[in-house]
Length: 604
Image (cartoon, rainbow, N blue to C red):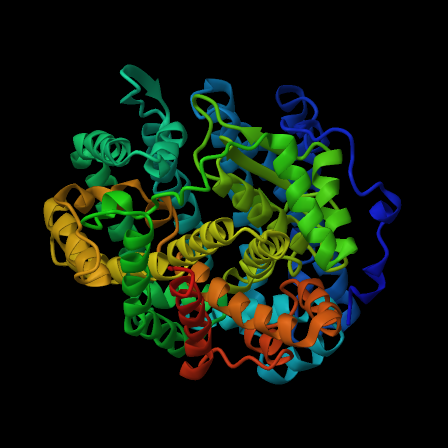
């Protein structure tokens, strides 16, 4: 397979523990001077676009495969340049969403790149029109680009005419994309006030969320109440933003593109059968009782009466410790090295290349992400590190995304990104590596109990919680189409929450506003099932690793090397996974149930 030659990396000779770890990134590897370079970079892209446009009269189903490949190589150059410029714009904006210059640059780049993209629409539309016989002939010689060409044709039933597609693209820049940016600006500008130890503190959301894991129940409750006080205070604005985005999604994807359902759009882009997603979400709902049992045990262990949604992430008594950024980096790299020195070297490269931005600060985009820009370039990682134990897991997660992109470096810019459900494989596996390493080193029973609780908390947050987000979205899209108000959506969300937790966890009324605070629900409808998919997949893969030992590692590395060059079903079939089988998803929940039983055994 393409990419097997990449088993040796330039970083293999590095020391396993560098003396320093960068905590701010260097964006000059993308663009050195945005103000001066923008026009020159756009002119370079324009020259490649002109070259592709010049080939339009010669496009024919009977053209040679070599002529098609030459056109695709030029298209790759456009995609690479666009990705670098778009990445810089978003990363700069992420540093400080209040920075006028960064916001202006991001808007300019989005508008100019959309215009260039519109000029190339003719190629995808032509390729979709090629008859199956000639398409098969041309794809036979496409090599690594075959799946990219298959993907374009997959959207044929939902593609509009060239003028219509251009209008949609232009509309999205000043429509849905602008609304997403507005949501980010508004919510990342929120400030929160909390009284801690008798002193009032003002903080951003990342700072506030650290207190939902406070050792004190009153602080946890106050943190959540403050979070939803602020978000509900803007419920009219945020609710209208959400309804606008939902209606836009409906108008384009159901009205114009004729998808059968709102979620079918996401499924096709992920190249995942509707059946697989239905089975996944059904399995999650059927197994909600596992987590209800877990939270009852946690309440007993942590002495919480009664168990409430305020106290879901109550830390175990061994979790109060704060961790320095450098120590967290060393812990993650050492865990990675215990599984695969090659992955550890790649993760370390993110630090040594200064492609990671660690600390939280005012105006910085919330959350964490990894941006794999182009093949061969070290990905960029953004964190909001506050020193909590969970921040170490987040670091392991995002570095997993980074090594995935680096492992797939020998693929095209069109095929090195894996599709969304598999995109979470390496990130979640990285968390499992870290958790397992910490568990194996620990002999103290109380600490092991705490580690187990931490793992189950994370699994809940990334499996069941995410699946219920998507369940809500499916309902919300239908309700908005029927004219629902924001308050009605909030009541529906609260109902889903209470179904999820049953009688095990009391859900106070203010949690009806939680959906307003979930960025993915606004920016990427139905995105969140990828987390459920990825986590359950990793539980199955990790079980294979525990059974097979070192023999599993090459298979796993090969999976990462594949990137997005094949269909997800084909990639997973190589490791014996059928994503449409209920038994597969159930096996993941069986593993979680075993962990809950293990936790119960620690209670003396």
